[in-house]
Length: 245
Image (cartoon, rainbow, N blue to C red; front, side, top):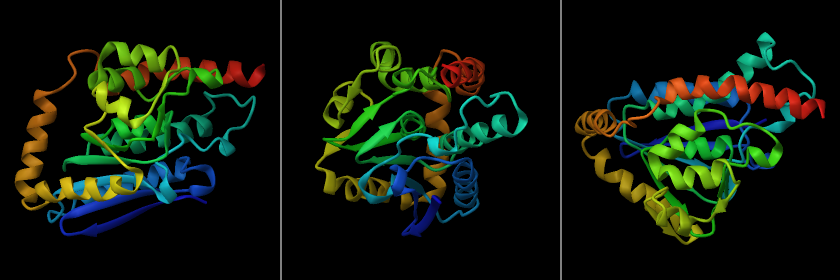
Protein backbone atom coordinates (compact mmCIF):
# COMPACT_ATOMS: atom_id res chain seq x y z
CA UNK A 1 0.00 0.00 0.00
CA UNK A 2 1.10 3.53 -0.67
CA UNK A 3 1.91 6.04 2.00
CA UNK A 4 2.71 9.67 2.57
CA UNK A 5 6.15 10.25 4.07
CA UNK A 6 7.04 13.41 5.98
CA UNK A 7 10.60 14.49 6.74
CA UNK A 8 11.87 17.73 8.21
CA UNK A 9 15.31 19.24 7.73
CA UNK A 10 16.68 22.73 8.27
CA UNK A 11 13.25 24.34 8.47
CA UNK A 12 11.94 22.54 5.36
CA UNK A 13 9.23 19.88 5.40
CA UNK A 14 9.45 17.32 2.60
CA UNK A 15 6.26 15.44 1.74
CA UNK A 16 6.75 12.38 -0.46
CA UNK A 17 3.97 10.57 -2.32
CA UNK A 18 5.16 6.98 -2.04
CA UNK A 19 3.26 4.42 -4.06
CA UNK A 20 5.71 3.62 -6.88
CA UNK A 21 3.98 0.43 -8.01
CA UNK A 22 1.19 2.63 -9.42
CA UNK A 23 3.40 5.65 -10.22
CA UNK A 24 2.38 7.25 -6.94
CA UNK A 25 -1.35 7.03 -7.45
CA UNK A 26 -3.30 8.38 -4.49
CA UNK A 27 -5.65 6.26 -2.38
CA UNK A 28 -8.24 7.70 0.03
CA UNK A 29 -6.01 6.62 2.91
CA UNK A 30 -3.11 8.55 1.40
CA UNK A 31 -5.39 11.56 1.06
CA UNK A 32 -6.05 11.41 4.78
CA UNK A 33 -2.32 10.95 5.49
CA UNK A 34 -1.60 14.00 3.37
CA UNK A 35 -4.02 16.03 5.48
CA UNK A 36 -2.33 14.76 8.67
CA UNK A 37 1.13 15.64 7.32
CA UNK A 38 -0.01 19.17 6.52
CA UNK A 39 -1.53 19.52 9.99
CA UNK A 40 1.83 18.44 11.46
CA UNK A 41 3.68 21.06 9.38
CA UNK A 42 1.34 23.87 10.32
CA UNK A 43 1.66 22.99 14.00
CA UNK A 44 5.48 23.16 13.87
CA UNK A 45 6.67 26.80 14.02
CA UNK A 46 10.20 25.77 13.03
CA UNK A 47 9.05 24.93 9.51
CA UNK A 48 9.23 27.76 6.97
CA UNK A 49 8.66 25.95 3.65
CA UNK A 50 7.43 22.65 2.23
CA UNK A 51 8.45 20.63 -0.82
CA UNK A 52 6.06 18.07 -2.33
CA UNK A 53 7.58 15.29 -4.41
CA UNK A 54 6.98 11.74 -5.56
CA UNK A 55 9.02 8.62 -4.87
CA UNK A 56 11.06 6.71 -7.44
CA UNK A 57 11.40 9.51 -9.97
CA UNK A 58 7.77 10.29 -10.71
CA UNK A 59 5.36 12.79 -9.21
CA UNK A 60 1.79 11.44 -9.12
CA UNK A 61 -0.28 9.54 -11.67
CA UNK A 62 -3.58 10.67 -10.15
CA UNK A 63 -5.98 8.56 -8.14
CA UNK A 64 -5.10 4.89 -7.64
CA UNK A 65 -7.61 3.32 -10.01
CA UNK A 66 -7.21 -0.10 -8.46
CA UNK A 67 -9.68 1.20 -5.89
CA UNK A 68 -12.31 2.04 -8.51
CA UNK A 69 -15.24 -0.39 -8.64
CA UNK A 70 -17.00 -0.48 -12.04
CA UNK A 71 -20.70 0.29 -11.80
CA UNK A 72 -20.65 1.49 -8.21
CA UNK A 73 -23.02 4.31 -7.29
CA UNK A 74 -20.81 7.39 -7.04
CA UNK A 75 -23.26 9.01 -4.61
CA UNK A 76 -23.17 6.02 -2.25
CA UNK A 77 -21.87 7.22 1.10
CA UNK A 78 -18.60 5.25 1.32
CA UNK A 79 -17.67 5.90 -2.33
CA UNK A 80 -18.48 9.60 -2.04
CA UNK A 81 -16.33 9.93 1.08
CA UNK A 82 -13.42 8.01 -0.47
CA UNK A 83 -13.17 10.30 -3.49
CA UNK A 84 -13.56 13.26 -1.16
CA UNK A 85 -10.55 12.09 0.85
CA UNK A 86 -8.31 12.33 -2.21
CA UNK A 87 -9.63 15.83 -2.96
CA UNK A 88 -9.16 16.85 0.66
CA UNK A 89 -5.50 15.87 0.49
CA UNK A 90 -4.42 18.20 -2.27
CA UNK A 91 -6.84 20.88 -1.07
CA UNK A 92 -5.07 20.75 2.31
CA UNK A 93 -1.71 21.21 0.57
CA UNK A 94 -3.18 24.38 -0.91
CA UNK A 95 -3.99 25.60 2.60
CA UNK A 96 -0.56 25.02 4.15
CA UNK A 97 0.55 28.14 5.99
CA UNK A 98 4.10 27.88 4.66
CA UNK A 99 5.18 28.53 1.05
CA UNK A 100 5.08 25.33 -0.99
CA UNK A 101 7.01 23.97 -3.96
CA UNK A 102 6.17 20.96 -6.13
CA UNK A 103 9.27 19.11 -7.36
CA UNK A 104 7.87 17.42 -10.46
CA UNK A 105 9.65 14.52 -12.13
CA UNK A 106 8.16 11.87 -14.38
CA UNK A 107 4.39 12.04 -14.78
CA UNK A 108 1.80 14.32 -13.20
CA UNK A 109 -1.66 13.25 -14.37
CA UNK A 110 -5.23 14.04 -13.29
CA UNK A 111 -5.30 14.42 -9.52
CA UNK A 112 -1.50 14.52 -9.71
CA UNK A 113 -1.76 17.65 -11.81
CA UNK A 114 -4.20 19.08 -9.28
CA UNK A 115 -1.64 18.33 -6.57
CA UNK A 116 1.15 20.22 -8.30
CA UNK A 117 -1.25 23.11 -8.94
CA UNK A 118 -2.09 23.18 -5.23
CA UNK A 119 1.41 24.47 -4.48
CA UNK A 120 2.67 28.03 -4.69
CA UNK A 121 5.54 27.24 -7.09
CA UNK A 122 6.58 24.40 -9.38
CA UNK A 123 10.07 23.19 -10.31
CA UNK A 124 9.85 20.59 -13.07
CA UNK A 125 11.99 18.20 -15.05
CA UNK A 126 12.40 19.20 -18.68
CA UNK A 127 11.11 15.77 -19.70
CA UNK A 128 8.23 15.66 -17.21
CA UNK A 129 4.86 14.58 -18.63
CA UNK A 130 2.06 16.84 -17.40
CA UNK A 131 -1.53 16.29 -18.45
CA UNK A 132 -5.07 16.58 -17.15
CA UNK A 133 -5.94 13.18 -18.58
CA UNK A 134 -9.57 13.22 -17.43
CA UNK A 135 -11.29 13.28 -20.83
CA UNK A 136 -8.86 10.67 -22.15
CA UNK A 137 -10.50 8.17 -19.81
CA UNK A 138 -14.03 9.54 -20.37
CA UNK A 139 -14.10 11.31 -17.03
CA UNK A 140 -15.10 14.89 -16.27
CA UNK A 141 -12.34 16.93 -14.56
CA UNK A 142 -12.58 17.15 -10.78
CA UNK A 143 -10.97 18.77 -7.80
CA UNK A 144 -11.54 22.29 -9.11
CA UNK A 145 -9.20 21.59 -12.04
CA UNK A 146 -10.43 24.40 -14.27
CA UNK A 147 -10.11 27.01 -11.52
CA UNK A 148 -6.65 26.06 -10.28
CA UNK A 149 -5.24 25.64 -13.80
CA UNK A 150 -6.70 28.94 -14.98
CA UNK A 151 -5.31 30.86 -12.02
CA UNK A 152 -1.81 29.56 -12.82
CA UNK A 153 -1.57 29.22 -16.60
CA UNK A 154 -4.53 31.17 -17.98
CA UNK A 155 -7.48 30.41 -20.22
CA UNK A 156 -5.70 29.05 -23.29
CA UNK A 157 -3.64 26.49 -21.39
CA UNK A 158 -6.66 25.46 -19.33
CA UNK A 159 -8.71 24.86 -22.47
CA UNK A 160 -5.89 23.03 -24.23
CA UNK A 161 -5.25 20.67 -21.32
CA UNK A 162 -8.73 20.35 -19.83
CA UNK A 163 -10.87 20.25 -22.97
CA UNK A 164 -8.49 19.03 -25.67
CA UNK A 165 -6.32 16.67 -23.58
CA UNK A 166 -3.03 18.31 -24.51
CA UNK A 167 0.06 16.91 -22.80
CA UNK A 168 3.04 19.15 -22.08
CA UNK A 169 6.59 18.63 -20.92
CA UNK A 170 8.44 20.66 -18.32
CA UNK A 171 9.95 23.06 -20.83
CA UNK A 172 6.51 23.91 -22.20
CA UNK A 173 5.13 24.21 -18.65
CA UNK A 174 7.61 27.02 -17.99
CA UNK A 175 6.79 28.72 -21.31
CA UNK A 176 3.07 28.93 -20.45
CA UNK A 177 3.54 29.94 -16.82
CA UNK A 178 2.55 26.60 -15.31
CA UNK A 179 5.99 26.21 -13.70
CA UNK A 180 8.79 28.50 -12.59
CA UNK A 181 11.84 26.64 -13.89
CA UNK A 182 12.79 23.40 -15.66
CA UNK A 183 15.95 21.38 -15.05
CA UNK A 184 17.41 18.02 -15.95
CA UNK A 185 15.54 15.28 -14.12
CA UNK A 186 18.28 14.56 -11.59
CA UNK A 187 18.51 18.22 -10.56
CA UNK A 188 14.83 18.92 -9.84
CA UNK A 189 14.59 18.01 -6.18
CA UNK A 190 17.89 19.68 -5.25
CA UNK A 191 16.80 22.89 -6.99
CA UNK A 192 13.45 22.81 -5.17
CA UNK A 193 15.24 22.39 -1.84
CA UNK A 194 17.58 25.25 -2.68
CA UNK A 195 14.62 27.57 -3.23
CA UNK A 196 12.80 26.33 -0.13
CA UNK A 197 15.85 27.06 2.01
CA UNK A 198 15.36 30.80 1.57
CA UNK A 199 11.97 31.23 3.31
CA UNK A 200 12.92 28.44 5.74
CA UNK A 201 15.47 30.80 7.31
CA UNK A 202 12.64 32.83 8.86
CA UNK A 203 9.54 30.64 9.28
CA UNK A 204 7.42 33.30 10.98
CA UNK A 205 8.00 35.83 8.23
CA UNK A 206 7.53 33.17 5.54
CA UNK A 207 4.09 32.29 6.88
CA UNK A 208 2.99 35.91 7.02
CA UNK A 209 4.26 36.57 3.49
CA UNK A 210 2.49 33.46 2.21
CA UNK A 211 -0.80 34.58 3.74
CA UNK A 212 -0.49 37.98 2.07
CA UNK A 213 0.50 36.47 -1.26
CA UNK A 214 -2.51 34.17 -1.43
CA UNK A 215 -4.99 36.86 -0.43
CA UNK A 216 -3.60 39.43 -2.85
CA UNK A 217 -3.07 37.02 -5.77
CA UNK A 218 -6.42 35.23 -5.40
CA UNK A 219 -8.17 34.16 -8.59
CA UNK A 220 -10.92 36.67 -9.37
CA UNK A 221 -13.14 33.93 -10.84
CA UNK A 222 -15.00 31.19 -8.97
CA UNK A 223 -13.16 30.17 -5.80
CA UNK A 224 -11.38 26.82 -5.57
CA UNK A 225 -13.68 25.41 -2.87
CA UNK A 226 -16.76 26.30 -4.91
CA UNK A 227 -15.14 24.94 -8.08
CA UNK A 228 -14.33 21.63 -6.40
CA UNK A 229 -17.99 21.13 -5.50
CA UNK A 230 -19.22 22.52 -8.82
CA UNK A 231 -17.23 19.92 -10.77
CA UNK A 232 -17.90 17.04 -8.45
CA UNK A 233 -21.48 16.14 -9.38
CA UNK A 234 -20.66 16.12 -13.08
CA UNK A 235 -17.55 14.05 -12.48
CA UNK A 236 -19.64 11.53 -10.53
CA UNK A 237 -22.08 11.37 -13.45
CA UNK A 238 -19.21 10.81 -15.89
CA UNK A 239 -17.77 8.05 -13.70
CA UNK A 240 -21.11 6.21 -13.56
CA UNK A 241 -21.56 6.68 -17.31
CA UNK A 242 -18.00 5.44 -17.97
CA UNK A 243 -18.44 2.33 -15.83
CA UNK A 244 -21.75 1.39 -17.46
CA UNK A 245 -20.40 1.56 -21.01
